[in-house]
Structure formats: structure tokens, C-alpha cells
Amino acid sequence: MREREEDKMREEGIHKIEVHVAGICLKNEEGRFKILIGKRTRSRQLFPNCWECGGGQVHRGENFVTALKRQMKGEFGIDVVVECPIGVYEIKTNNTIIPGLRFICRPKDNQQEIVVRKELVEYKWIDESEIDIYEFIPGLKEDLKRALSLYKKILNRSE
Image (cartoon, rainbow, N blue to C red):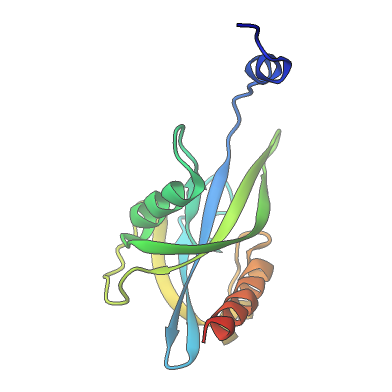
């Protein structure tokens, strides 16, 4: 059997790269949306003491949804339902750019207890009106606003 040209190119062109996934976890409380945020430790190499929403590296053999569920469980101790992707982002380091994909998610159960892990020092469920108060990692503030707008449109269509 003759090897197809596109198969040969794919095999020769495999590169090992780091890819991330991140979530924006939303819940609706009496008509107001709350956003789960966590404060990074001051010892973090990138963006110490900034607020984020959870996420991290996709492991070999994982898809984006599985990776996000693992990250949210690992960072906040909760199980989430991944709703939809909202966009791409980049983490710029000294010598590289790490690509990422951000998703809207929601708690599988609103009664789950949040337990922050070693990468975070505290968490909060903030009201959508509080977004501008916090110092978030670069680009997240804009993504939060876009995620809320998109999610409200999705929910309005399903009603």
C-alpha cells in the first residue's frame, strides 16, 4: 500500500507544543450572574497576585473539555459542565507564546463546596457588575464581559 502524501507530511510535521485551556465558570442567582474567580499566589512566575478563572495545560491524550474539567476540579475542587468555547487567548512568556482556548462552563451542582488548591490563595463568586474592580490576568476582563454577553444570548434563545 502506497503512503498518501498528506499522511507522510503529517507524520514528518508533528511538533511538540504547549497548549492551554481556561474556563469562565458562571452561575445564575436570582437573575444575576456570578463569576467564579481565584487569586493567584504571589509566588507564581506569571501574573502573581492577579485574579483568574481557572485553567492550565492540556495533557497528552486529552481533549479540551476533559482538560478543562480536570483543571477546574484541581484548582477549585468542583465539577463543571462545559457549555461552549468563547475564544482563543495567548500567554506571552519571555521566549514563547502559549496558545489557549477559553470556554464558558457552569458548576455541575451549585451546592458544591469550593476548595482552592496550591496555585490559588482565595476564591470569590463575584457579581457581573464587579468585573472592573479586580486586577485580572491580561485579557481576561474583556473575555469575562464577552462571555456574559454570549451566555445571556444563548440562554435567551433556549427559553
